[in-house]
Length: 369
Ligand SMILES: Nc1ncnc2c1ncn2[C@@H]1O[C@H](COP(=O)(O)OP(=O)(O)OP(=O)(O)O)[C@@H](O)[C@H]1O
Image 1 (cartoon, rainbow, N blue to C red):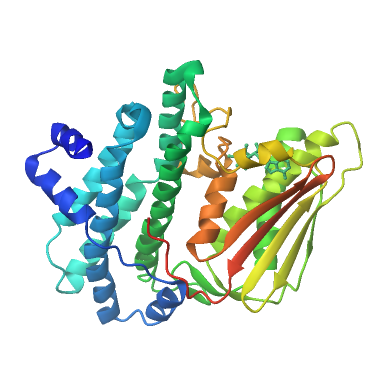
Image 2 (cartoon, rainbow, N blue to C red; image 1 turned 60 degrees about the vertical axis):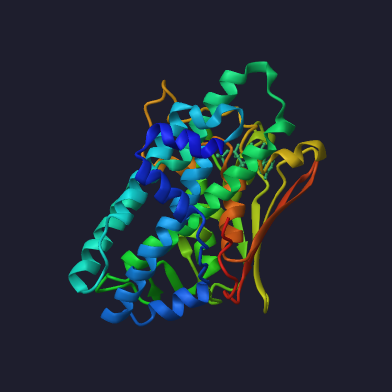
């Protein structure tokens, strides 16, 4: 197998066998509901159980990704940035596999520190992979046929989805150690999250970026009951709404550049029985129908990568503002992670509606690519 041969070149035989063996094991998904119920009783026993689960589950998920990173088409696996990411995955796999059985509280605490460090090690995976894709595009030059790159798109979707899951599981475990969790918070989950409030905060952040770039910003009007709450992960929702509003503000701002009256962006929050739906509507001129298939891809963007040689950026915080065209595909993965979805409907010559559906029941299992 080609992937196995390449792994051989860079690792000891024992590690290769172990990665291959663990990469074949079955992953176990968790639901939002389960995370919430389990985390609502962070007793010593539960923390121990959670750590034991992660000691087994994380190497399986990480090994899968390490193997996939070795067998990407068009030579993407050999790009320096991708090799760097591969090494982070191998280092984390090694750390997890060399950790002895977790028997007591002391082991559990050491394990928690270790997975916390793993999470930090992987902070820059998204921009670094984006850089790898750019290195590939540069190398292929004009020969590039975007339709052929669908395989890479599919891989990146699986890869980033898996990363969301791994970070959620680690973050959730680490947060359960917080002796003074904020009210109504179980790890990353807020059991009484107000989508209107999160949408408001995310819109303000997006407006601040717009102000910085253009010197002005359209208003954002939010319609919905601010007292309505449901259990969800506020950081995920913030990220999604931020990306959608940022796109809308930019579109409106660009279209009405010379006008002093900008049509506002409107957000509607609907609380259904099954779903909470959030619509972000703008009058920014829309997207041509022929361009729609491209907006969810990772490979079309011409924007500059902040980790590129000439850019002096690259902190983890830059990820969401980096502007390398990942806003929509990554937001859709976050929505799908807990059983929701994201759709974009556009009227060219008028504006765009983004529909974000979040599953309210929280009982869908994590997608496990
Ligand atoms: N509301 C919108 N109105 C018009 N065009 C849009 C809108 N939303 C998205 N687009 C188009 O879709 C493209 C992809 O959006 P996406 O959010 O994925 O990336 P980006 O905005 O270019 O970069 P980033 O989100 O990383 O800053 C945009 O570049 C833009 O051309």
